[in-house]
Length: 233
Image (cartoon, rainbow, N blue to C red; front, side):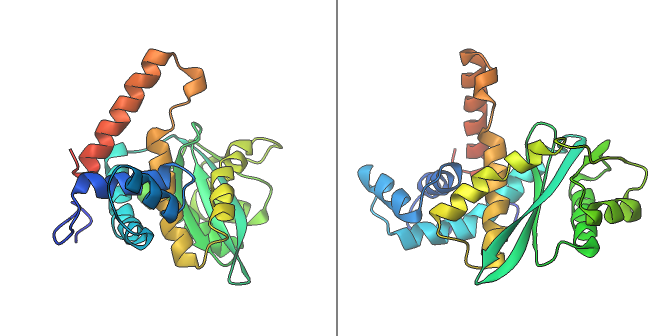
């Protein structure tokens, strides 16, 4: 299976069902067993293990296609990291969001030093294809060192409360961590968070700021985009 087009050859269920199961899992705080029950209520009999395999196989493919179609995100990057316990060891999930709260990228690393911050910045630059207008972080020294080494010409803000947008964006991951009873490995966390962030970007439209007609229009566009990306139309 290539990263360009999802290949459903050899699967018993049609793309509409597979993509729907993956969407349910990453869009809402559901477990694989929850998705199994929702599909069963609709007359679709699959096991939760099958749902897990669908998410593991097709989730990253959908996420890559969505990233290619979305283009470049905002020009103000908010960087922050949160620690997670993986098999008794502390790891760090580095995350970057733009001024609109959309997740730009994530990276799981075992350290929160200068080298780890540089690695994140370089990944962001490669993924976005350009430098930001502003970089907002907390006062962690690793960010200052990485900023001087990689993008010294960019304005770097560390003012108190300026990075609340990135800190608030950690909440969905924390919620899923509790529901999943902790992540099992760095690879699982990297895979899940990468897909989860892209799916949330697509369907998060700021409902409280929109009129109902605009909300319905944006939601309809998001579903059309999802159907196009998953080849389930």
